[in-house]
Image: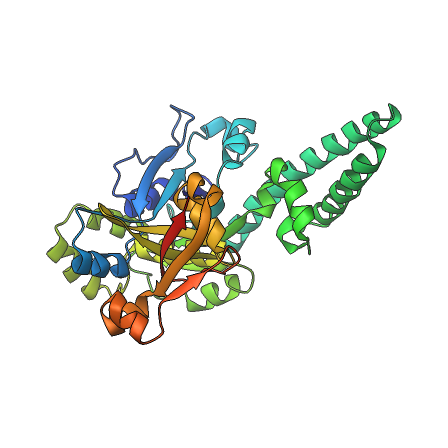
Length: 354
């Protein structure tokens, strides 16, 4: 399951955005001083292709891919004067796959927003946190080297962490480093914040929605960005479907907040969707682009990967065009693939296994 953490400065509207995209009713206030734990909610990745397939195959269940959103609250008023995130916050932040930086794009008590400053503040906090990890690890490795422990492996790891340290010291996110597969594998356990994907959620008022093109253009030079009138969309969740459509048309909102964030999350994380059709369900699955048929098998069930024989697959678009597996085979659009086949977005896959 994909995990997206919503983070931002106090009063940026994190919980408002969380409620807007998850249809939750989490407490919205200037500062939340209660439970330090984040608000968590799961959202279906609505995909018309899944609905179409179930109309054809008529299975009892339709199962969408899901995204789990984390709203990191709990910053107390006195803490906010000194730091954005506590150590506990930072530990929780390391558990997600990507971040949505919620940035205030509306006036607050007459104070105009400073979106680019807020982005820089969060970025700086993340960099400082990762720097601390690097410093501690380098110190630890040096102690181990003095004791003569696995010198070759430790030297390799030390060079890599020093490479990260130098990048961070120059004010750069670790995402900017050109890291190979082995380096990324070594760094995975560190859960560096600046190595995770991040995109910007510009939280604006309904009056200013669609009027921030220059700002969005500027931000998009460094980050993917999506503009959302958070408070308005949170209120839309209280209406029925017809009223929601009417208000969206009136305010020229072409996509709901959840669809916007799903699209940008998939793009930012490099994800694709494939589908399986079983006896009981039509299901969508998320998979990193460049994954193999064996990876897809393991995503469905670990036993499928262990006993993998082959993958039978065809594309959703071809199925929609030809209408049945029989016609797909006649047209040469039904394929048998081995473990190394690179799965494409929209593939419908059946895994043959022992």
